[in-house]
Length: 278
Image 1: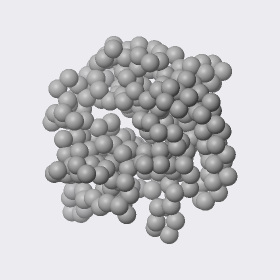
Image 2: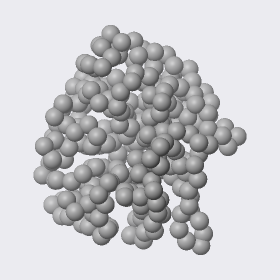
Image 3: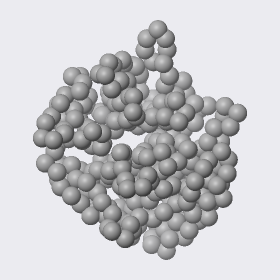
Image 4: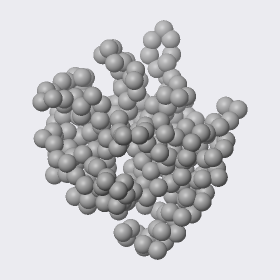
């Protein structure tokens, strides 16, 4: 199941993650059930780095084409695949399929139509993050903030390699991870009036990836996958979700859940997705 750690170690870690997550998530300002749930395994043909979860839909790339990932009717076990005819990178469910075309431009594919949302092309793209009011995307040292009306502004990050971005709607904040060539850190982006955005490092917190869900900020850092909450304006770690060494992809989604995928095909969720979604 998980080659790097061995099946028995993985099973222990899942149980350990469950035991850690339940008592911590039950308090500390959160609401609802946030236990760790093992869902199944993604087909090895699906590109690991491309997997995303948004709007109740899981997506990935298989042979260059976007595929939809679905659970079996029993809600557990293997994920099955529905193929689409869309070719792009970093697909995200957002009023259709949102991603980058072959030129590196952000586009939307919906009902057989393709719309170019942003003309500038990016070579080193990051997965877009979406909220009801905003889409954040980019690459090549540029983060783009685009409203749903199409108005956009750029924040330039010279000398940085962008890794990931997430919109924490409940907190009214945007977080991203980026590397300066030495370390990858967590940053907060915020509006700077009269126009534009600025950013600050978040207490020198080192992180490769970030996403938001289940009232927590989730990071891939030296500990593995960790969850954080804010108290008195400070981030505090309340759980190590997965400590087994290996690559991960974090996927933001519904407010009540966050998905994370291992590079060995495993898929897990913290929290419960909205009814009828995913």
